[in-house]
Image (tube, rainbow, N blue to C red; front, side, top):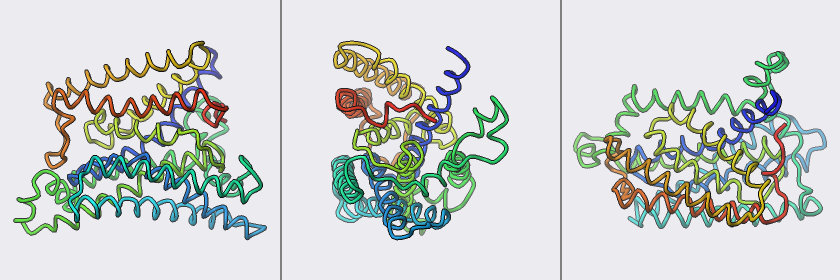
Length: 361
C-alpha cells in the first residue's frame, strides 16, 4: 500500500469510527442507568434525517444562508428528534414496564422507516432521487482547522476532519469524568447497579433513568447527523449504512467494557474493519457467499469475546437486564448483532452503488 492509501484508510476509519463512537457513548450513558436500548440504529436514523430536514428547509427558504444558523438548527433538530425517540423508549419501558429488548428493536425499525420515508420526501421536493443537498450546512461540518490541515502528512492524519470528530473525543472524556468523578454521575451509576438501594438513599430513580436515556439517545443521534452532513456531504442515502454502524455501536459498548474512553480507540478499530471489509469484499466474486462466511466468522468471534469477558469477570451494570452476558446469551446477542449487520451488508452490496462505496475526501 502506498502512503496515500494508508492515509485514506486511516481517514476512513476515523470517519466511520466517529459515527460509531457517538452511538456507543449514548448507549453507555443509557446502560449506566440500567436500561438496555437496542434502538440505537433507529435513533441514529432519526438524528440524521431531522438535522438534514431542518437544514434543508432553512436553506430552501434563504438564498444566502448563515453557516452558524445552519449549524445550530441542524444540531438542535438532530438532538431533539433523537431525544424524543429516547423519551418514547423511556415511557414504554420505565413507566409502562414494556420489555426493553422488544421495545428497542421496534424503535430501530420505526426510526429507519420514518427516516427513509422523509428522506424520500425531501428528495422529491428537491427534484428527484439524489437531488437533495444542504451544501451550506455540510460545508460547516466538513470545515477543517485552518492552517493545521495543511501541515503535510501530520495535517492529513490529525487535522483534516470536521469539528464533530474532535467533539466526539472531548465528549467521551467528559462523560468518563462525569460518571466516575461527579455526584450526579455516581448517583446515576447507583440507579443502574441497585435501584432499590438508590431509592432508599433518596435518589429519584425514575428521573435519573429518564434523563440518562433521553440524553444518551440525543448523543447517539449525533452520530447519524455526522454521517449525513460530513461523510455523504449533506445528502440522504437509504443504503442501510447508518443502521449497520448503529449495531456496531451497540457491540462497541461491550467491547469497550462500558467505558467511554475505551470506546474512542475501539470505535476507530471498528471503523477500520468496517471500511476494509467493504473494500475487500467488493473486489471478490460470489458476493453473498463471502458475506455469509464473513458474518458467521464475526458471530463466532463476538461470541468468543463475550464469553471471555465473562470468564475475566467483566460485567455490565447490574441493573441492565442483559441475558447476553451468560455463556449462551452472549452467543445469542452476537448472533442478533451480526444478523442485522449481515442483512444490511447484503442489501447494500447487491443493490445500486450507494454512498458507502465513495472514497472519503
